[in-house]
Image (tube, rainbow, N blue to C red; front, side, top):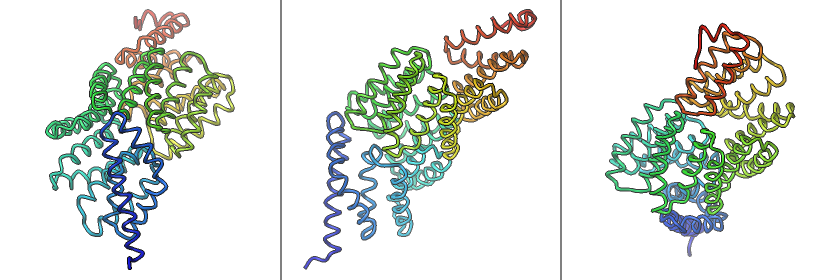
Length: 446
């Protein structure tokens, strides 16, 4: 007679085999990606209990679920739930010193903490994973881990350090002749250039990655590429092309039924509407994105949308609602330790305080935003913070401070080649010269 535990193991093995097949189909690209994800959605109510049962009664089998399904889990599962599962599997792998499983779980934990903005925690797991992967001479894992460490350093503002890891990863990936891994590395390198404000270099990497993604049918990669190309256009003030790229990214997210991705692209589309002065339309778009973020328990998306909604309420003249949403977003960002996001929200919060004539609070927000942006190496946000400081000081006739901050803002916007913001700085210099003609004689910046 077959025992109950044997029945459980057979049940779990069936769903593990199914998960392996779905992962293979996903990696084939093209139509295989949406088909695999659709079937995963249908079978998920059985797959997850089978995985959890296996983790309890047969660790090695349960551990395989987490690695076999990592691409599908990344798109479908709540990151905090995934961390709980991976932590359980990691502890069991340590008990039996199963090195291959340690590499998989440590690297996947690192990637999960990156998604949550917990970068120091991510580094801890990734560096341990890298050491073991190199000992095992596992080149595929080594290349992936090196890339994730590089990405972590991008978020920490250490761009040169990130490039060192990307170069090492590239040497490994080229030897492996893995187009998918190469493409993800190209995207990651483009992200580093985007973060540091080198938009032309970023676009070059994204366009190369786009060609590869189209060849191998990696639709998920295309969502990232189009979204980031849209962000470059948005920052350069090219709003219609930005909207086009974001809509393309949204279309691929919808093909994959990637609700987290749809939410991200709706947020981006809202930013374009806001830049075009369509504030009510932006607010409605952010609200749609917020609902999806909450449905997916995506805290990063939730705080981003709350902050964006706050900015829209400010533009619409509802300062109390603006303050409420921005303060909620800032609290969440601080809890996550997401310094770059904090900087962006602080700039927006400073604008609200400025409209409320709370000058000291506005000044403090802008100053904190400038410091955090510098810490994480985000030139665009730093330029915005300095520009806001200059504008605020000009409004309240602190002319010397206004001049110094506007100079810093213009220098950064010039290095980023953002022409409409350079023009904005020049307009404020003209206002300053009209109010204080001696600045024109002593410190002409034209």
